Amino acid sequence: MKMTESKPIETLNPVKDAKIQYKQRFGVIAGYLPKDIQHIGKWLSTTAEAAQKEKKKQGAEYTMAYSILQMKAMLIKNRSLEIQVAAMIHEALAIHKAYEPHVQYTIASLDDLFVAMNYIIQRAPEFEPKVSHTAFPMSRPVCLYDGDIIRLVSI
Image (cartoon, rainbow, N blue to C red):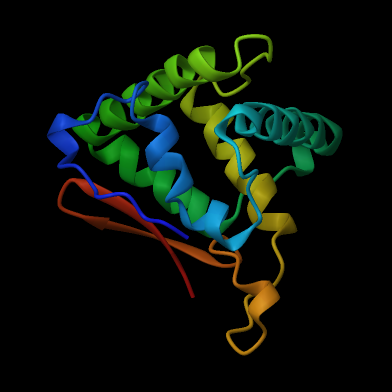
């Protein structure tokens, strides 16, 4: 696979450079995300819609994974970080509109993001380092905060 040279984050244009950055994502390379950015919105929207339906179906019994609850708590404690994640959601909407304007984008808020992530985590295969097909980075994520960066790390 041909890799393109990375640009410093300050020089990136989120919409213009999205196609280049997308192809370098681990999920695309590993094969569990669509190969073409023009299909990621549909995949994400379908997943987010299923997550919301599952949440509604479970009603009062709905629970979130510990790592998602940690991430929510971290954002509540750090307003600057919460603003950055909200900005990321709006940036993703702009990218989505540029590449898949005909597909409804269903991640409009932090709550939508958390519900979708929770749904994905609950369905991800258990991480087993010796079995390559389970190398899914959201198998057992742990939310880590390092300065100004949130990292979901698989354990």
